[in-house]
Length: 239
Picture 1 (cartoon, one colour):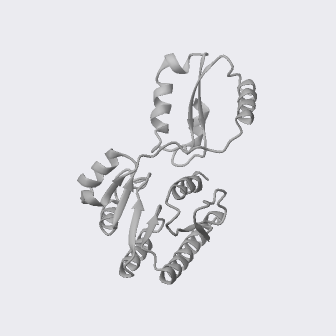
Picture 2 (cartoon, rainbow, N blue to C red; picture 1 turned 30 degrees about the horizontal axis):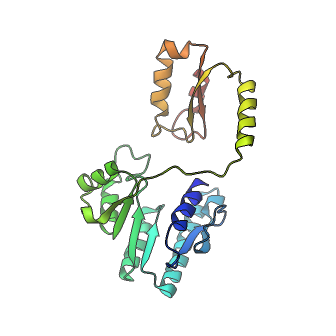
Picture 3 (cartoon, rainbow, N blue to C red; picture 1 turned 180 degrees about the horizontal axis):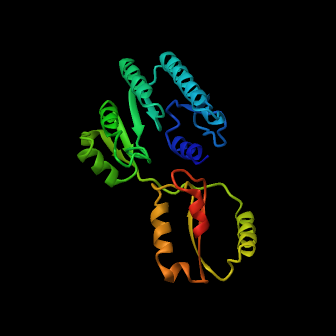
């Protein structure tokens, strides 16, 4: 997926003089060249959460074993899945005198609209040696809301992820898609990806349906494409 592609771009731009051990997913399609790959994680193949959790925990104990063997100077974590367990893993790494860097793609989980997890993440972030964020606004929020020292925070702007696609195949597909849905002469508005309140699905839907100049215009079309999470999929039928 795009997470694996993100990892590859990240690792490929690290100096080749540094030994890198990459702990990733068994189904990783984009394995970086500048590293030793260990496919410890494969929880995505399981349907039930208990099996996902078991695989995740097992993978982390394998990482601890490798860390004890190799004694790395730094471990970079990109995502945490089981908060109390992940806090325990962080404390064990710190006990082993291993520095821990975390990329906070989101300062709080997407679905935590009421910020119930704020106390946990404030504590987790304070125990890290460094935090990477992708924007100055995220850094400012870490400073003000999470009380993290400025010296711990590093801003690395998130550039575009270049997907390896065949442009000719994409162009042919777009032609077929426009013909199938009668879109050749229309201006198309697209919300693509995970459909959730966090992504503003509900706001877009309400705005579109509440604006006659949009929803009653035959020259305009709104397409919502992707997996549905915390929204009523039946409401798509009204657009």
